[in-house]
Length: 384
Image (cartoon, rainbow, N blue to C red; front, side):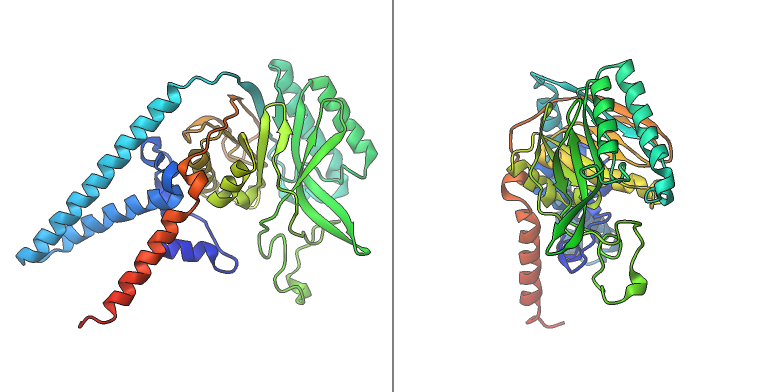
């Protein structure tokens, strides 16, 4: 756990595929995440495997066998406690009927990332999401429709023709739209570009914007800004700047805690949104760069744990999948496979409670860091 904390917090930290995400597909085993986050789940996995390895490698000495037996007993106790807590929490969630639910739809158009920033594809890009939205809301009304990161290939706040189209679309569908797109701001005589999300009320206008704060190095910003050869061409948008607006959106479903792409891979981001009053979570992501289904599935597994940690419904809208509706127990209610197009839907219930993890954050993970440091220091004085 301490090693994974170090991997996440170092410069350009990488939270990808921490050990705890290996069990996300088994909801019974991950409910403890509402106490200690992904670190708590990873701790149980690591302790169990360490106990098994110690038992296999134990020599013939009685002391070694007894130590291995104690380790197995401890691991068994952890597993029993984890499963027991998981069963209790799942029962409590299922036995607590939501007083109010709202139908929400997320669209996945599966468009090639290479077309995202070329003006000749603007109409095709927008038209694909508009068609999915119209078909979905015609089949069944939806309070909210969610489009993924980079769904808009224009600056909706400064291009009135496109803004008017979105206003007509939402009015006809009788829905509120939440979509990802670029944002441009004038700062000190120069333009700054933000990776953003926008809220479009039925009939318009575009009312609110969220700006992504945790950017991906060498993809959205460039730590080595002086080396021009490393710069990625974004068309109009050459480089993003960290955003300053992360407050939840007041939507018809409740206050929506926004996370764009890699922000949803870090538990502290979901915690921060809940502390700001988020009643449900939305993550907009662009998975077109992934290329392989197994990596997209890992990204989905990581996001699922955010729902458990803070006990919120989570809507994941992806460009190429998997898009999914995830309940507060981390279970997938509806999903679209990778490299396909369509919509997912669910009846989302806003929630107001705060979990232990939402209150104390990564305290357990840092306790593991301190315990590891203490063991290392204590062991320096021992004879080999």
